[in-house]
Image (cartoon, rainbow, N blue to C red):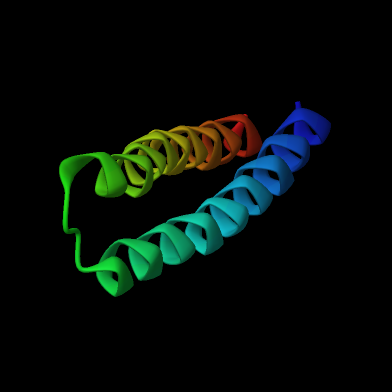
Length: 71
């Protein structure tokens, strides 16, 4: 169980770190364009939504790692 906990901790942390960088890049792209049309902003917004889902999955992995580490 400890190995699974450490693996989930590592994966959750790495996925969260990568997702944070991606959401920062998408937010920077979204704010720098000025959004003259909906089609130009939809790419950045969809990336932010999907990255938000990845951040939630990362948080679930970290929580599962804590649960498995306590067993």
